[in-house]
Length: 315
Image 1 (cartoon, rainbow, N blue to C red):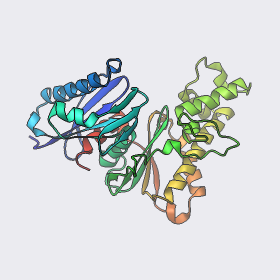
Image 2: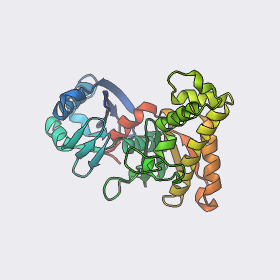
Image 3: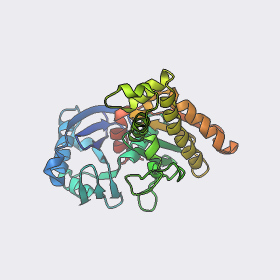
Image 4: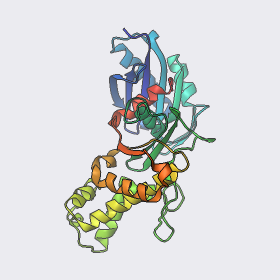
């Protein structure tokens, strides 16, 4: 039997996912239950503690073997203090998550941004395993990111490092307002939301595209249409990919990672997205900064968050 186990928690607006990992990042057991966000922060934190204890009880391990617990949370936080300053999804403000969970569980608890822990999961046991310097993009409703330097999450002075979706990268003439309050953010063109917005705009302008056949356009529809040669869909996909590639070119001369890893639902589009990203990266990155650099898909899928959260106590 293992001497020590590590527990990761991925807190979502609808569900809480919990997992047990060994010291190598292998996911041994998982559990998922409702968040119950409508009951408030205290109730959700108590539910997390309940799920953590439950997964250990249902496993072959003992509570004494739990060496640490980590949690990935969406929102802005004071990471060293374990304080959630504001979580838009949960509408939490100034919630002392670390302190509360440690009191409930009697164990060391570490918290971090959900995109950071997903990046750590890929670095520990996924597409970045064995590579000390990586940058991860999570393409979903928004664009999340995480920077791993020398095997550890780089958080920056205020915990804002890795907010890749809020790089202001779209030229003013093309830029629109972002939910963060800035203009021209990567998230406005390269997220699922941005891709759908561009598709709806094209349909409303009366452009000739098969996307007009969909009553409710989703990002998958855009990628599927692009794969059939739909010119409007191809233009949208290439625009999303172009700005992702440009952002990676910028990161390459600042961080100089060995590998860029792309995860999230949008990444499942495959090579129709990855090829133009790579082409743009190659075009705009100095040769010495792109030498040996790979742009690959994430491999852990929905488990990246719990694996990375578990790894907060090890890496």
